[in-house]
Image (cartoon, rainbow, N blue to C red; front, top):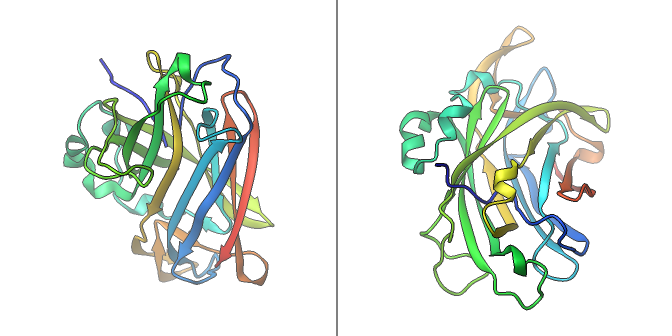
Length: 272
């Protein structure tokens, strides 16, 4: 029987009970950047690493409403050459098994990593401002899969969360993955790619517990190979920059849709 919970991202994610009254979600893109510097163009791409951190809470306290859908896009950054790097099938990353089992067959397909910090409370206490929250801290591993990224979540019982003084892991045994897909779009007229995913219902509703993501940090590594671009062999990345915005500033756009259907669009700019 699959043991599930929590979510990220992207990278992230949550869960709660229908009918519970939440205040308005407040989102913060605490880090959204690419590295190293360089604009790039379609004929001369610049391989990039991508960092993406965010936090969410509601206006009345630390627990936000469950986020069901994510759309994360970096202007001018595309995974056009992702298929040139080692891939795994999504099903090979989604087993209810320790991460070591997944890595034994898909280690070469790892393209990034991160961390998810979540709050856990019984459903009945989810709207009680005096409730006691437990913690569920997850190790985030990103795998290259055809057409997207597998967002793998595993209970992390080895590290200390930034929000507590002592070591604590996840009170729920979590071993699960979320399938994210690439969607082409334009930001400011520049070809870009949005990484989009929905959090499965069984990750937002598990038994009588509510799990809410408070913060997530993630990095997609700078992975480089060579490919012919307009007839010339050039370095290309798993993620590559082929353009940017005005004054060499890159726009990062993120859409969060919570379980109540409320959509929030957040944006941030950083150097190209």
